[in-house]
Length: 115
Image (tube, rainbow, N blue to C red; front, side, top):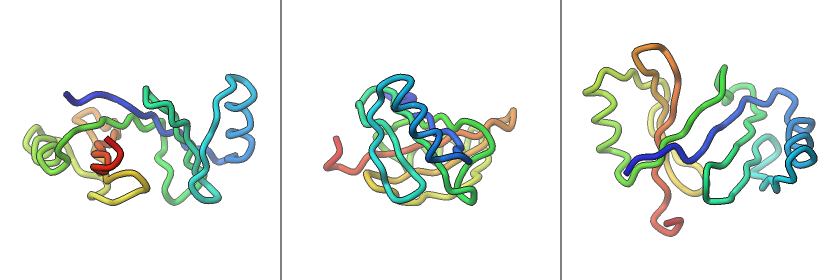
């Protein structure tokens, strides 16, 4: 079943944002390079995107699915507009789309080794 498993925030002040969430809530943030970090609880996790080129304009909900290609076809068939084609990241692959109201979301599939 598809479910929101991640929310990615644009973080222009990446270092300060990472420190804030760690200090305010005690969240451990795992770094993936100099401008990306996220919690890895396995529940609904939070990512911080500090790269201005990669960051979305607003929070980005990420929906986890078991079959990325089937989800891509379903999004297209339902009228979603693909805003970023399928790409790989540490732990899986994803794409971004805009719904009919213009909201941007992402759909991801974890690597088989990730569960």
